[in-house]
Length: 112
Length: 111
Image (cartoon, rainbow over all chains, first blue to last red):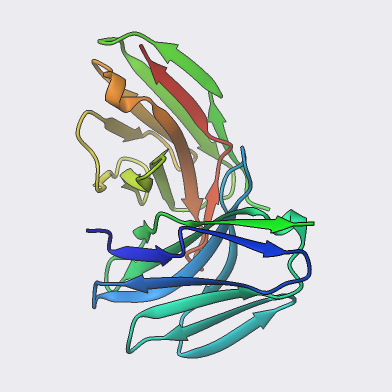
């Protein structure tokens, strides 16, 4: 079973719309979460990280974290065609410095 | 931005062949990683290292060896390659904030 589960598997939103992506861990030892973005044919690049309960905003991107439920979500407002990509959620385990576990990802398509 | 360079970009070999994938980072990061990426399986950790001479086992290590010769260089070795090892391989290094910086990837095909 995947320790990090992402939903939906794929998502289509219109240009200018809001995209919401979810990520949950089934492992109580998970500590921190990251969101990576991977454009087609490219390597993943870190988008945002969140380590404590609450919300973090950077431009059009907002991440939420609920540590009690080990759930994080990424919201992209005013989505642009350039946001079309594979979004990967990653988690690290308490005391397991340096090891990240990735989910399978959500493929986002923003239609002009 | 952190620089991680992988070589080769593409590699084709036959079943039973030996393959070495190379990775160099010039950011003085301690941690380096080898991942494989496959449709339906996502990014899976093969091996990682926290310094020269150190090796840690990842989640899918079978059929792979790795060696960290210097702070900069991390190699992935496939001895007796099999078609199941056909994949896109990424090397990465990690900074103190636990952000991963990925190389451009090596696409390996085992015929």
